[in-house]
Image 1 (cartoon, rainbow, N blue to C red):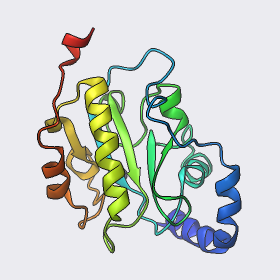
Image 2 (image 1 turned 135 degrees about the vertical axis):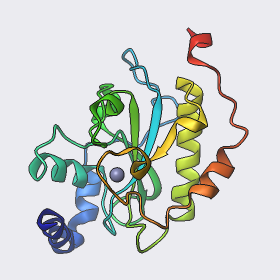
Image 3 (image 1 turned 30 degrees about the vertical axis):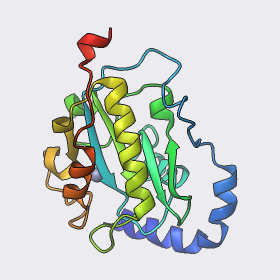
Image 4 (image 1 turned 90 degrees about the horizontal axis):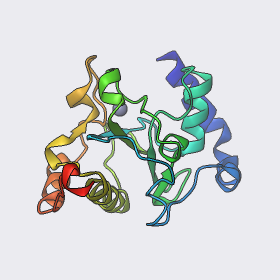
Length: 195
Ligand SMILES: [Zn+2]
């Protein structure tokens, strides 16, 4: 909780320079092509959805927070989807973890992190809802990942559904039903049939 308050204060204090960091940050906006990493992909089986629990942010800010406050090896997620405060509304940022095909650090079960792609939407969905563009980007990204890695819709989880420790992530207002409805009919090619 203390760390969260520190982060909030830091974000408010730096709000004026976010656009500067935004321009300098190392995280990339993907083209549809570079969602496919250049190196041999991991055996991805799950997709886990998170919220940042902050009103604003971007991959660079969460990367710094995870390194400096949590002492993790960088941004816990593979992708971050912006809400217009800190990065573009609906902008998908690709983390180093995806480019290097590293296990996630976004859930408290190592066996799940090992095979689960983590996507974080910027926002606190205990209080607000994702923007229309965030949901559009989330659906687009998930469909693409499902297709590329043969991940069935039943293997898409909210963080709170799969974590061992209680968490509300990605917030009570996350529109799970809408997401599931929009993913209906996504054709899945089993991984075994693609190799
Ligand atoms: Zn989470």
